[in-house]
Length: 158
Image (cartoon, rainbow, N blue to C red):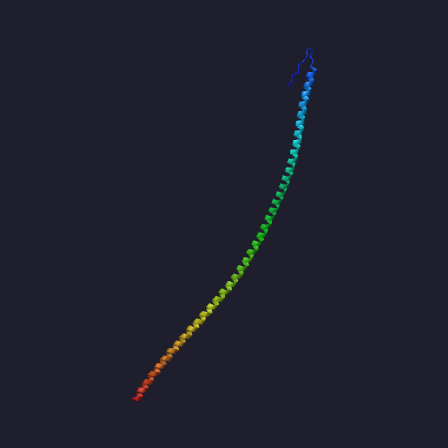
C-alpha cells in the first residue's frame, strides 16, 4: 500500500496522487479482468452443470417410468399367475373328482365280481359235494351189487 505524503502547504503531491490512481486503476482493471474471466468460466461451468442436470433429470424420469412400468407389469404377472394357478387347481380338483368317481365305480365292480365269484365257488363246492356223494353212493351200490352177486353166485354154485 502506498502512503501519500502531504506537502508543507497541506496538499497532496499531484504526481503521487496520479501515480497512486494509475496503480489503483491497473489493479482494478486486472481485478475486473480476472472477475470477468471468472464470470465467463462460471457461466461455462453453469451451462455444463445445467446440461448434466437435464441429462440426470431425463434419466431420473426414465428410471421412474421404468419402475412404474415394472410395478404395473409385476401386478399384471401376479394377477395372471394367480388366475392360471386357480385354473390349474380347479382342473386338478375336477380330475380328482372324476378319478374318485371312476375308482368308486371300479371298486363296486370288483366287489360285485368278488361276490359273484364267491357265489359261483359256493355253487361249485355244493356240486362237488353232490358229485362226491353220488360217487360214494355209486361206489357203495357197486360194492353192494358185487357182494350180492358173489353171494348169489356162491349160493347158485352150492
